[in-house]
Image 1 (spheres, rainbow, N blue to C red):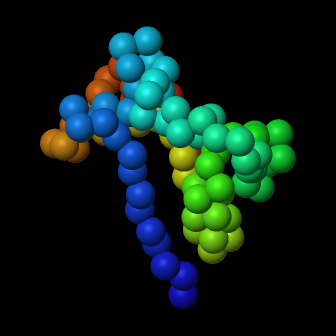
Image 2 (cartoon, rainbow, N blue to C red):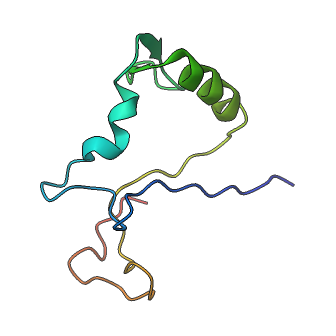
Length: 91
């Protein structure tokens, strides 16, 4: 049986996007280095530091499935459904 590992990145105020729905400085490290790196999709190339590339190469080699997204229909901490977001997921 496989392991399930959950990981989330967010700013201290609990958001993963800025007021323009862009990821902003939280993910700037994906494009601040001189090492080209891509995961399983070669069309998505990141430019990261050597240390980040070494870490991601090891971490991502152990992943069989990713579920990634910035928009969800569940409220921040209380489990309520946001009616503006409900049903927008492509899953």
